[in-house]
Amino acid sequence: MRFILAPLRHKASFGFLYIANFVFAFHIFFTTYFNSSFLGARGLTEGDVSDMYLFGSLISLGALIAFPRVLRLLGAYRSILILSFFQALTLICLSIPAFAPFTFVFFVYYITSFPLIVFLLDVFLENLTQKEGRTGEIRGAFLTTTNTALVIAPLFAGALLTNYPFEALYALAAALLLPFTLIMYFSFRHFRDPHYEEIHIKSVLAEAKANRDVRNIYMLHFLLRIFFAFMVIYTPLYLHNVVGFSFEDIGMLLAIMLLPFALFELPLGKIADAYTGEKEILFVGFAILALSTALLSFITSSAFIVWAIVLFITRVGASAVEIMTESYFFKHIDGDDSDNIAIFRLTRPAGYVAAALLGALSLSIVEFRYLFIILALCMLIGLIITPLLRDSCSRRDRERETLLHNKTIAR
Image 1 (tube, rainbow, N blue to C red):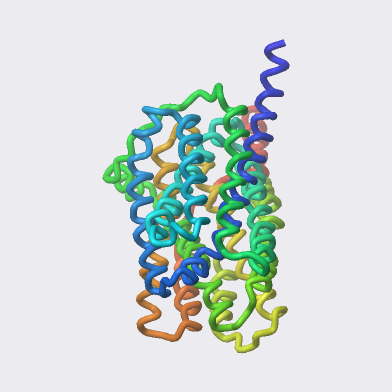
Image 2: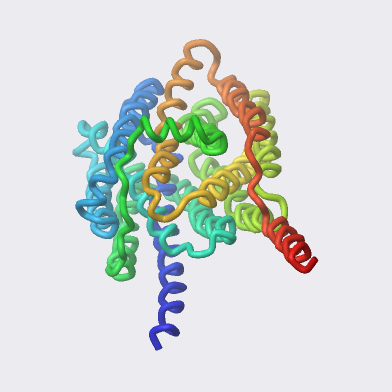
């Protein structure tokens, strides 16, 4: 009976983790693309917004580096419950106008804590993943749950802002953490923690220097994180303050723009696993990403359909890059490799640091509209690095190698 129930529990754990991931992602993306506008409504300038993201991301970098020590003390299960509680409390404080003078403190904690929860969800997922040959498929499904929330959440948020103030977004985001916390509490009480190694930056840098593929996949994912952070900080401000779209229109634009993440990542993960490997899709993804991002600077029309199409194309490229970098990386690590997972996840706050610095520097040199050209030039670096990757074997390649091996033995 135990042998029958164990696989069922394993599948159920996958299902609960996917649901929890969807709820958590929805709560994050409900506010993500409106954070800059919210901060502007509370009197912060574009420079102040950049500084806040920069400061919070630097703290997040330090927290992720020290996090394995916390995990050895508390474990992943208790850590995710504690972080969820304090994140909900922080969102409630952001939703109360009387606490506006403390916006800087609460917002910095908010953007510091959620990368830690994302890291923990990766730990849970990696410990459930048994067949490395299905890594692209499994992570594609996981990212699809994330990106389904990514598409839906801004649409609801934009509609909400037509009748309610920004504070309502943060109150609802806090409420969404309740079902997330309950799912994690009841579904992973018996989670067995892997061994969490302390992050040693010098040793990781030495490994990256010695291993070309590790170094290059870090760099490619870092480029993607710069793109995401840059677009989160500056695109809503540009669409509202320069182009003149309402928040309801911005919500619909974001929903259309983000559709490729929900539509393409799962099939692309399966294609990479079965046929091509990641390298070819990565190259095409960066090419689409760079060209379409540059095009944003040359749009003079305020027509909704024009912006929707071009923004959609940018995410076609970004979705390909995201699933390919995730798949390539996680094919080469195990669930207890918290050191490398942490370094990989450091690219998220590091991307915000780089994006805030890049944006602030660019705004001092060029007009707002030309920021997208500078970002596109950065993405072209991906076209230089991608060919340097050693392509991982697809399922078709492994089957061919097995067939040749069997023929050799038969002879």
